[in-house]
Image 1: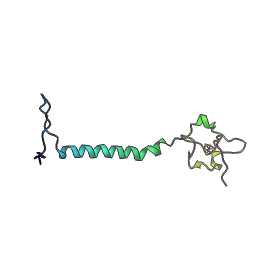
Image 2: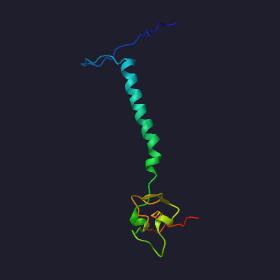
Image 3: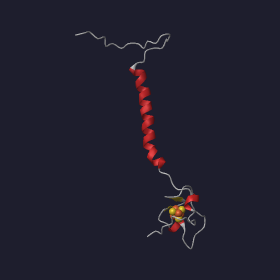
Image 4: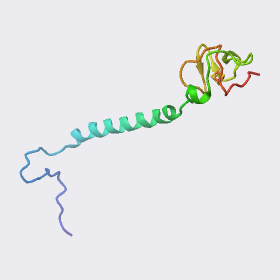
Length: 101
Ligand code: SF4
């Protein structure tokens, strides 16, 4: 059986005077990178869920044949919509209108 030296060895690059990387140095950096990845993954799906822009939804800031956002099931008072991006007016309307039941 051969004897293997398992003691930590310094990095040896020709011409380099860098110090060996210790676990104490490496662990916080790895933990920081892991936290950044977890934060990105946690926020990714929520942020990626995009709303339709007003133009594509044919949004207008006035009612259409008596229909308005305040009567729509997708309206979120005071001025948001579950489907359309940006502020919407309670008196607005778009092609996704669906009357509240
Ligand atoms: S009418 Fe369109 S913009 Fe207004 S709340 Fe409904 S889906 Fe949103």
